[in-house]
Length: 341
Image (cartoon, rainbow, N blue to C red; front, side, top):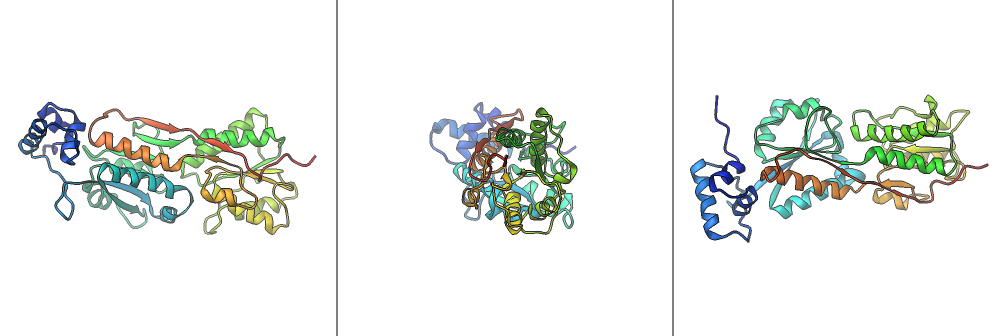
């Protein structure tokens, strides 16, 4: 059996210092006693610990960000753009280089991704699940290469992860519509391959169940891919029914924007004819016509926390996987009002 390569914790134990001290020395950060730094460098040499270098020869480490191919437009769009920016900003603050990898399950094998990405970074974050299934993540596991999940989790596996409180977001927005007096509520749900959207739907249904309300199946149309405005075709399906809800919950802001377009095309007014509320609180939601009632999930902060957690694992400051949940907040705007009497 081949011996695993030494890691930062091995260096820390050999030098009788903390893993954080080793990281500070490697990255030439201030605050370390010169004698301590010499002990660390001696341990690095004795163990043969490898430090990655950039093109200029300066000591640097890389961290990876893995995202499904279909989500790439999100880098400059709505929800995941903020998460990615938060992750990158915090990585740069720690002195890491960020390596972005796009996974396309139709063209890439696990082995290629593992050898071409996972082995070239000190640790990586998986942003969202979708096509990056639990099996994909499990196949990418390597000794001493920590992985942090963002907006996804794997049941039965103790992966560190950072999540928005998606269940409570769905619960909050539904309770708001119920408190406004709505009892006929439709839901524009998302693809089941995204665990965050499934958790939001669970929160919506839990609030409705508490109120003794069962949503008719036609009021929860399946998501349809291929349209640039998510929710547009779902809302068209609902508006084609003889019996329509007085309010709809969109599983995401982007879904809501498409639904609002369909409502306007039908000659209906929001919220006079039908109320709509959503989850995300993207920048665009405050400038919709009318401004969109939504639930704020702190996306940038999720990215920051994911990078901090990854850094602690890389430096072996933490060894226990942690599941972090970031609270959500209802943002009340003009798109939802009491139903007509």
